[in-house]
Length: 451
Image (cartoon, rainbow, N blue to C red; front, side, top):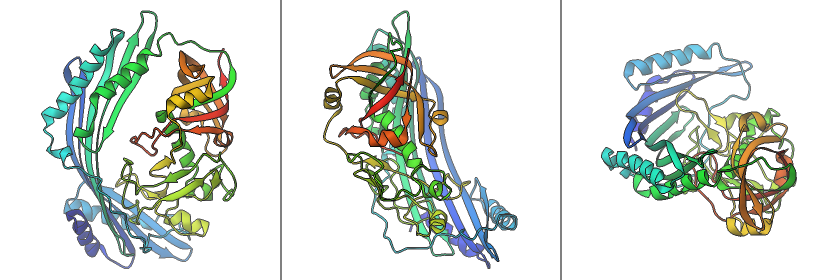
């Protein structure tokens, strides 16, 4: 048993009363380094710990849940949080569907998601990586006039969840990444580009690849123009495709569906996408940086097939959204730290890989637009109606190859139409931080608004 889980159980034993109690503990260690002009501009190394407590009181109209949290595991802070949670429960809205998770017999996947090298790697080496990354970008191309930021970050996090309903869960995860933003100029135009490398530990990072990525993305956008408006095929690169998948994933939350806030509501069994499109939420895949053995309520995570060969198969549920839908949780609870309560959501989205790489995809598309970055996602995309309108920078695709850079354009469609119009799914999967992995994705019939 982990020390954190043992501590959580002792707190639960001391907290027991007539009501249901849930204890969530978390600890973490993280490092942040930012280099600028060969010097360290910012350096932080911090440890954190805290507790989140939920108290459930049964009532005639359902149940009331009080929550409280503390950013410390001191006895006094824990006692105060427990008292506040009990007090808050009296003022909570009664809800017949509110309940704490109960063990459902699903065994957790055996996952190794931590790497001791995150903490054993000397700080000097982490600092050197950020400085070297900046130098590589500055010296990599004469058109690079500035490196806005070169960063190294890592973390180790652990959590434990226990409850009077029988939940006993603990999980841990580590990660490291470098990122850099380059600014290129040709004298008349400035463009930026991001480079990134991600791993479980510092030794898995490739700073040369991150530098090349930033330089390429910045320099190839120099001289970008506003193209004519057109209707064409859009090829999303892995990072922008991951953004698109995360948006789609938000509409596959059981919470969004039961509240009528998803364009997928009441469509189980329907064809909602191209037959090339199979979307999974699979936190049990250790390659995903959001992988986890347990969800935010302490139930075992599992692979959920959401869309299979274009047909809508299901949603992700936590305990409360599942009760509202008349079903049971499938390990889909997310939790925003000690101050958050569980809610349904996709954790580790991935598309089943297609049969083409990006080069072959461009060749088959022939003519269209290559989407390198998107802006305005929060204001331009509506997961309830499916409306999709975002700002885009990228490159034209001509004769099956990347051509002139373009900017100041808007790509518009609906998520419903875009899913049905997927014509190619790439095999170039990139495991990225965040909710979704990415790979190249070609979507036909996209309206590009230019000059």
